[in-house]
Image 1 (cartoon, rainbow over the protein chains, first blue to last red):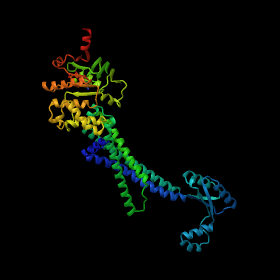
Image 2 (tube, each protein chain N blue to C red; image 1 turned 120 degrees about the vertical axis):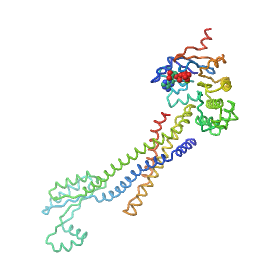
Image 3 (spheres, chains in turn blue, yellow; image 1 turned 90 degrees about the vertical axis):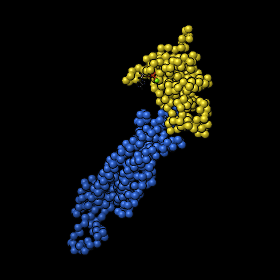
Image 4 (cartoon, each protein chain N blue to C red; image 1 turned 30 degrees about the vertical axis):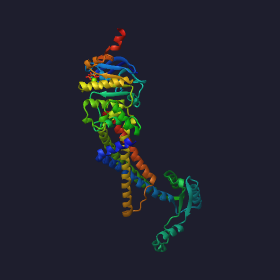
Length: 285
Length: 227
Ligand SMILES: Nc1ncnc2c1ncn2[C@@H]1O[C@H](COP(=O)(O)OP(=O)(O)OP(=O)(O)O)[C@@H](O)[C@H]1O
Ligand SMILES: [Mg+2]
C-alpha cells in the first residue's frame, strides 16, 4: 500500500495541471448536481408545507336544495383520501372574506346581496395528497348537481413540478457534459501516468507482479481526483447557498447524507473513469 | 518441467514463427537454443514466459498450461521463470540495489527483508561492491549481472536468457556464462538463446536445440540417445 501511495503521489506531481483539471471537471459536474440537489431539496420542503394545505373547493349553486347539499357532502366524504368535507355558508364566506380583507366590509354594507357563494371545502389525508386522488375528487365534485364550479391548486402545483422537471433535465445535460469532459481529462491524465511508468510496468510484468499491484496506483489516482472534485463541488454549492441565503432568500442547506453521497459519487466516478483508461492504455505499454 | 507440445505461433503479418515445435526441458537442465536470425528463438522464450500464447498446441510450465492459465494468474508462471535479455532492461533511474529491490517489492517480499535480500542477490552475482552504482555507471557485464540478480529475485525454477552475451566482450561473456553455470549447479534450469556457435562449443555438457524457420531441426540429447 505504501508503494501504491508513493506512486500515486509521484504521478499527481508529475502532471499537476492535468490532475487539477481532472478534479475541477469532476467538481463542476458534481457542482451542477449540488445546485440541483439544493433546489430540489428546498422545493420539496416548500411542497411539503403546501401539500398540507391541499384542498379542493366546490362552490355551490345559488338555488341550492338541501337534499343536493346533503348528497354532495355524503358523496365527497366517502371518496378515498378525503379527510373531511366542511360546509361554508354564504354568510360565513362573507365573514371570512372580511376577515382576510377588511376593505370588503365597507363595500359589503352597501351591497344588497352577498356576492360570496357557499362552498364545500374538501381536505385530504396525508396519503391522499396525490394528483390522482385530488383529480378523482375534482371530477366527482364537478358531476354533482349542487356544484357550480370547482377550484383547486392543481395548476400551480403542476407548474412547480414542471419547473422541477426542467431543472432536472438541465442539470442532467450539464452534469453529463461535465462528466464527459472529466472522463476525457482523467483518461489523458492516466495515459500520461501509464506512459511515465511504462518501464516500471514492463519490469513488474516481467518479474511477475500481480495485475492489481500495477492497477492500484492509477485507481487510487482516480479516487483522489474524484474526492477532491467532490470536496470542491461541496465548497461551490455551499458558497452558492450562502450567497443566496444572505442576498436573496432563505434557503435550507441540503442534508449531510446528500453531501456525503455526492462526494461518494465523485470517488466512484473517479475510480470508474481511471479504470476505463487503465484498461485501455495498459495494453499500449 | 517445461514442455512445448506441437506449438505453433502465428503473427498477423509475418505468418508462422513456430511450426509444430515439441520439446521438453527437465528440471536443472542447461539448454542452448540456437538458430539463424528469425528462426523463432525469442518467440519460444516468450511463450515459456507466457508473454505470448501459442496459436496452436500447448505450453506447460511447472504445472501451468497455456490453455488454462488466465491472464489474471499469469504472474504465478512469471515468478517461476526468470528472464534476461541482450539489452538488460534495467530501470535507468535507479541503482543496482534498487533495481533488484524493485523486483522483490512488487513480487510481495516483506518490507524489512527487501534490502538484505537484494544485497544477497547482488553478492551472488558478484556485484556486492557496486550495489550503490546507478545503471549508467555500470559496464554491460555488470548491468547483465544486475539483470540476472533481478531475475533470481522470485527464486525461479528456470532462467531464460535471450542473447544475454550479445552486447558483451569476451571477458564479460565468460563472466556471465560462469554465473549461469553456477546458478545451474544450484539446481536451476537455464535456457539460453544464442547464435554464437563458438560459445556453444565451449560447453559440450550443455544440451543444444536448433531451430530453423520455426521448426526444431536438431536436439543434441536425441543425438546422444541414438549414438
Ligand atoms: N511481435 C511480433 N509480431 C510479428 N512478427 C513477429 C513478432 N515477433 C516475432 N515475429 C516474427 O517471428 C519470426 C521469429 O522471430 P524471433 O524473434 O523468434 O526470431 P529469433 O530467432 O529470436 O531471431 P533473432 O536471432 O534475430 O533474435 C520472425 O520472422 C519475426 O519476424
Ligand atoms: Mg531473438
